[in-house]
Image 1 (cartoon, rainbow, N blue to C red):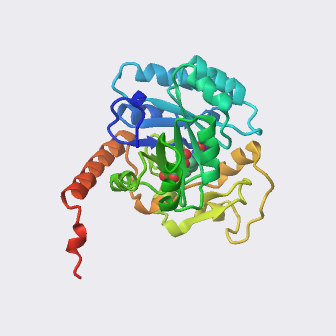
Image 2: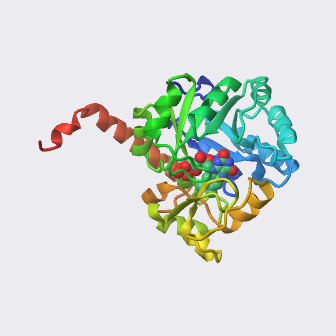
Image 3: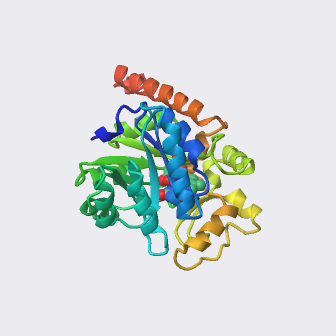
Length: 317
Ligand SMILES: Cc1cc2nc3c(=O)[nH]c(=O)nc-3n(C[C@H](O)[C@H](O)[C@H](O)COP(=O)(O)O)c2cc1C
């Protein structure tokens, strides 16, 4: 079990996960200043030039805070992303501390990031993809399990985490429905090194999505989440009320063909993604306030687990 030394002293073993149309410089800077790893997808800027503007802005805003956590960017390594080479070049120029790759683990991308001392995490939904990522030489694997926001998997973390640990001794991150500090503690106790949290950070003041989307996410319950490939070609979790608001019937959706980045962009603007973690979200804090709360909840949960390891004794037998 390990958190990379290059991360320095984090306040929490957690990453605020990259979210399409949602994470930008304000969220990343606030999260990193709070001692948690902040990230954003390169494609949240429409061009590589815009991506570079954000890299420069984040670098400048974090410079006065040497104790801040490192930040990361998400690159979609899929043939339908025509910007990969140009964005990767800028990642290398800017020496981005962490790169999170999705939809394809490539040794050449890993080599490029390692060339300046950066780290690569890769997200997976199955053991087979995790094995490929390990072969490609990644530093960390994100196990995207059932109930995660975005392109979620279907496996229970109790199945996938030990399976990945059986052959991978790098950093393992758990993604899927983690919204509280106690749940971060649970992820650590069950074998992950770090928690990887999306939906909880979507409902913060700094997230780029509309107030309407945040409100809908706050009131949603886990049963309001629909797992379907119909929106963009790859199975993902979406808020049922947003599908209804878009004039579609969640129970009678037409399945599209393969993933296409243009469709994906259009679809995700009108139909909103969130994971089962909505169940534990009932407010709209600033990102710094949220991180402080998570730190406290995590410490309380870990202390409780350590001081009362046999809490089963409290159950009447
Ligand atoms: C609105 C939204 C957009 C997302 N966009 C991306 C993305 O662009 N790239 C990516 O790798 N993951 C994306 N994800 C997945 C997250 O990075 C993360 O794996 C997931 O949110 C974790 O599960 P949780 O939402 O239950 O915490 C997205 C998730 C959400 C909710």
